[in-house]
Length: 230
Figure 1 (tube, helix red, strand yellow):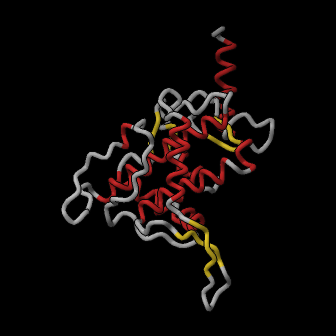
Figure 2 (figure 1 turned 90 degrees about the vertical axis):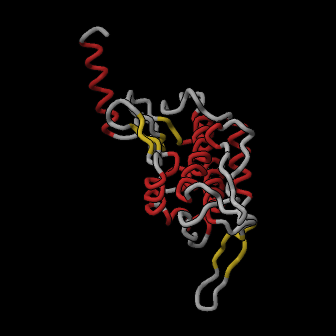
């Protein structure tokens, strides 16, 4: 599924050892993930985004009603208005915050089926998630027509800010809105395999798992439990 919101939600995955791995665990990993998905950001914005790892951001944070402890901004800001934290860490914090909102709304979308086991016990309140996503998307401002002299007309967002981190978070918000209000929402599922934490899009009503490997693993587990009376 090649949308920015879905790709961000998928940065939580099974680690292969019974636990959960976070592809945004460090600022460096976050930068690497952004490098791999810059085309998805460009697709939302309608233009390339300025590098977001070379500066701090005073403008990116979106109030989520105080429900996200990890989002508390207790960093100092110097006299020039430059965030005292490392720039990459700012990007990581903002993406993790909006990811919490995206995954909370994905969990709501798959109900009454259980959500991903990765964060089922610590999901952000759905109303707070809606507020965060909507406020983030609002940073994009309005859609406008851009028509360069030497190329066809295209649409792009005229953002209310030029801060690259704020625009990145806004792109995630807009992608989330487009996905959850579009036709693919009804196909969203949380994989029920024992060690899987993925969300996936169901391609066929008979599809129960995110991948053949999960299906095979579950069939083996069921056979084992049946054979041993578990």
